[in-house]
Image 1: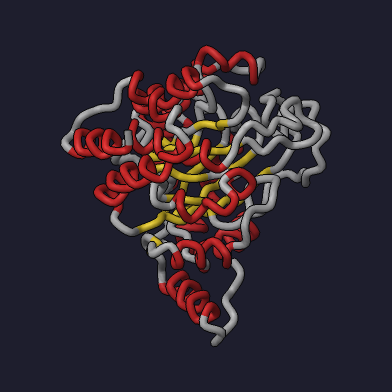
Image 2: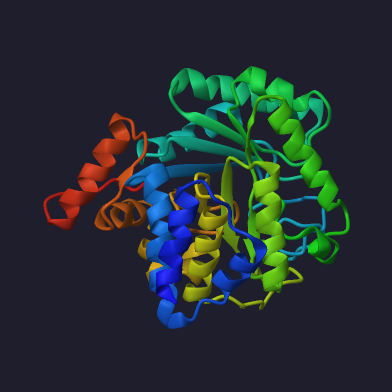
Length: 350
């Protein structure tokens, strides 16, 4: 069957589109054919992005104490997960943390705050942080992730210099009520639509491994295509203790590769990011996933530790890829890591 993957890739490279039956077939790829699927999806990835990997860095502006009840989230209402909780970081501290990622090669900084959505005062607070961040690092992209937006808020963020807005659909519309009761799937679509209309690049993805069927996963992927998401973060469920999904381990590395390949083939020219949970679920196949995904988060996530930034950058280099848009400091970090591999120096840890 592996020849079929190349035929499919040829069609997609010629501007064709994946249909639902084909998408379901990809998720059913036998284990001994997954490498052929990855190779075919990798042709699409290289056609759109070459050998470059976009590095993103999260800054958690406000952590915990969220009034929403999203079942996957350690910050949810009623969560007993052991996480740090704090109110807003100062602009100086936010910029300091962002610099750690930028120095490690990140070209996009994602400013995230817990909660249902920002008040207008919160938006002004974030606007001030963005202005200071841009003054210190003029070339960096800025993505905000603040929850559900009200009228006029996306426009204010755009005016302040925010480039993109992240708000994930997370799962299929038919499944959404099973993971959250305090807002709806339509609320999420509305926020992504507001962001796009205001000139912000829409960043919207999903969380896999929450018990969704293949049909629901395909529904979610096709919804993201229809929504026109410019970047699709694929998160792999981290089943935090103290949340309703604690103990839910439904993924394995080959399943994760199939899902990433599906995202690539549904949206051949869209940025596909292997996001939270990649370390636990892709494990030793993370470098292979770079041949499908062209983007990742560097270092830690919102409330959990990720792979060391040093190790991420070495993984990118060892797999034969380069960091997109790395500034001089980022290039120094990557060079130091290469040298460390040869035993000549110590690499910085972003």
